[in-house]
Image (cartoon, rainbow, N blue to C red; front, side):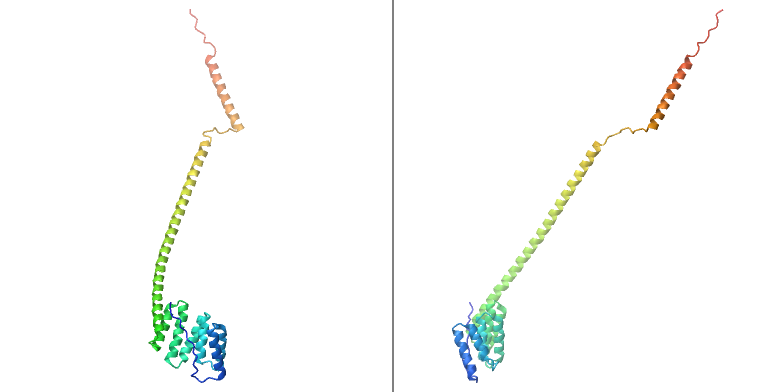
Length: 241
């Protein structure tokens, strides 16, 4: 685990009024008692008359860190590093910036903050350790991201194949249904054709029937007349003298 050693400024080398000093001491007392919200309020009061007072800013940033308000803590610490007049103070502020990034598992940002710490204080053993830890975690994260990316590609490929298979299955199912319906329609047509009466005589109207009957009667009359004519009167034979 990384080292979280967060320091409080308790030195009053800078000229401050008695009221500011009192608020800083009060805030430090609350901080040691782990009453971080009370400590925050006291540090903020110490900055009323001098908003750029670096001990008050630094300790305010620490109280925010302990309340897990990492973004706010970073902003305060970054401002402290800019205002600090010595390398030790700048190194301490950047170190705590690194810690806030580590708490949020932002490994690359943390590593950059620790590097800045070591530029101001190359002998800071805690910063060296935390830098090594951050770089190790950053590498693990990169490997994990690469693995996740590969796994995602595999999953995407499987999903694409699954969609293609489903599409093919749907098509085969539809083709099968269409074929079944076609066979059914053909069977129904054949069955209908079998049931259709074949060669039924067409019906005659009454007029046509009468005409046909008259024609048959005429034919029969002609036939009878012909037969009668052929019999006729017997031919007289010559006398035999």
